[in-house]
Image 1 (tube, rainbow, N blue to C red):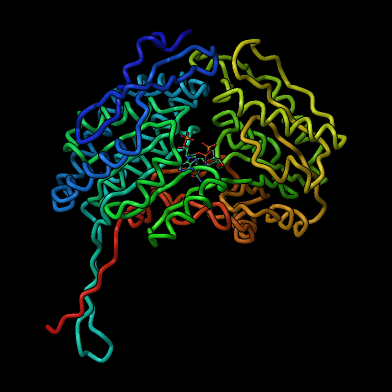
Image 2 (cartoon, rainbow, N blue to C red):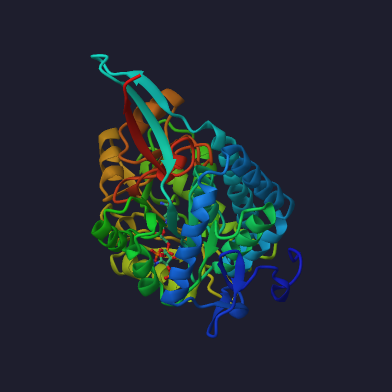
Length: 483
Ligand code: NAP
């Protein structure tokens, strides 16, 4: 069954949102449906000067927005949550068409994305301060938090709605204004969210959205502009490091949500059926194209055969096809380029001697790839070192708890780990040994707007969501006062 309408009826704006106006540009960029290779829309292509106009608009709007009562800001965000929730299917349709993901994942993402508006609407009026006496009583120490200013935000293609709202909601809540640059593969969802925010009553200039083919040039100019107060980036570690070098020039605060290489460790005594259910979520949510996706499976030798056989059976039951059709479990990869990166990794693994057989067939047209369980993989091989970002599950066997923990932590990344253990107490003990910002214990999903999302090591700096998320957009200021 098709999920409501066709690609020609997409309701997303296609211009640049600058100072509350949708502006068209002379040159246009096509946005493709990766399941059919048809053009969904043509969007604006911002120049450096458009990018700086967006900064100017955000800077001007900051004067008023930063002193707008928190309650008023919260009510606007709450309205954005209500509009998104009422129009969830529209949001899911845009996501499924431009990103390719399965309908169930698109609805899941739209719901998750809307929740950031709700969570942060509830946080706006609770930004805390602090008052205390200095230990020698020579003064009082008053600690305040103030909005940083204009926030530049860059988001990836894999969660085009949630990565935008996870930044916009806390920034607006804190009193910051925003210039958002979504990924060029999936810009329509962010443009639609811009329209939702306008309908919710966000004043002109508070949220600006630019799309561009000159990402590096436009971003460098924006980051060099003294009116920009902070950068919030989600994407690859490679690009994150490049941006950190640029922000260092201005000592610009930077929040970095970067790549992952999540281990999924099944320890001795774990419930294999529960681990399979968790693995299907941790690996297959978003077709494996998630920074939190289980990338490497380490299974205790006593459970390895049962786990592998059951995972192969579960993969074989998956139906691959256009995400917009509700009957499919796995949609298309976002592009042929992303699909081919996964194929290359598989070819390298086969070259190293493992057997990789597709679990099911895929449509001829479109950027599809079948799911693979890859047996007898060596720890340290390409499949365990690289972020696969697709429906491929390499399985490595281990003998002792220490060996499982060592292999899980043997990576420069540290976003999330999955731990399956015989009971929650053992699970939490093992979770404490994991070098990652998040650990899912006996479950396949950890993300929640109310939880601090973020990584250790090269997976990032800072946290988004939870109570911590708003502090990425607040500056701490201390007043020494003689009272
Ligand atoms: P990417 O190549 O780093 O691109 C992400 C964003 O960076 C896009 O908007 C891209 O714009 C922009 N970009 C690229 N080059 C840039 C430059 N020189 N200056 C400024 N911006 C630049 O990553 P991706 O392939 O889209 O996303 C997948 C990666 O994101 C994975 O590594 C995944 O783990 C990570 N991710 C992390 C999280 C998290 O929360 N930790 C969440 C989701 C994804 P263009 O599209 O215009 O090139």
